[in-house]
Image (cartoon, rainbow, N blue to C red; front, side, top):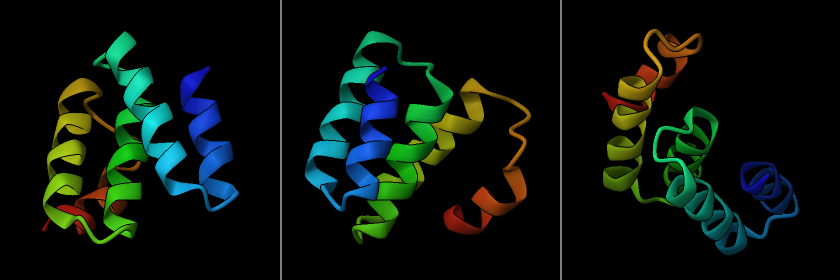
Length: 77
């Protein structure tokens, strides 16, 4: 539920709210793949490449093999 709210906030360009929703989703379930992925991509969009890479690497650990692995790998190289 929190991950979906994060997506809605992100689409409304409410990035800080989206960060909070993704964070709450991950606090409940640290292996939540969609929340981890979306958080990483949002951090990248916000210019925080280092944190984005950390989140996306965690995403790969929690959901191998990720269906979108090729497109996500372009962010962490």
